[in-house]
Amino acid sequence: MIYLIAKSIHIIGVVSWFAGLFYLVRLFVYHSEAQEMSAERRDILQPQYQIMIRRLYTIITTPAMMITVAAGITMLFINPGLLKQSWMIAKLGLVVSLLIYHGYCARIIAHLNDNKIRWQPFRFRLFNELATIILVAVVFLVVMKNTFNALYGLIGFIMFAILLFAGASWYRSRRESKINP
Image (cartoon, rainbow, N blue to C red; front, side, top):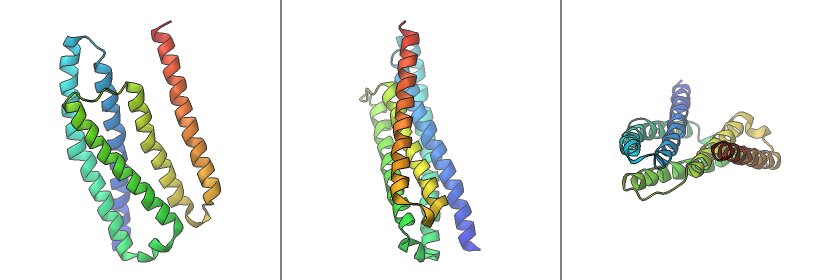
């Protein structure tokens, strides 16, 4: 029973964590786009985005990450046999990658607050896709478990990433052609 409660809390945490990360990087895009606006609009929008970013990161995203990790550790404590399964080791590697991504977002926030980051909106959009790729990989690992063939999974994962980045590039070129005909 405790395992199922931990699993439910883990899923709720994962959903909240990813929702926070996706919106957080979207706010980075908006903050970056505001840099190109008139000084009057920029001086209104960027401080507002910084407030929204700080609140989202500290009140929603980071607590959701902590809940996810705590519930995940609880499940592993209750069922340590999971650590002997290759899919779980791969999942944990992806979780570590996501924790690094989360930490890098904190670094971006600090740079945005100090006006030290000069990423273009497109670069933030690509950065956002990294979390999407991790999410897709984790979901497939968890659902497929032992039937997950590593080679086919790796090939599918790479193809998904290529399609995602190709779609982002296509969107960017199409958007720029509308702006500068």
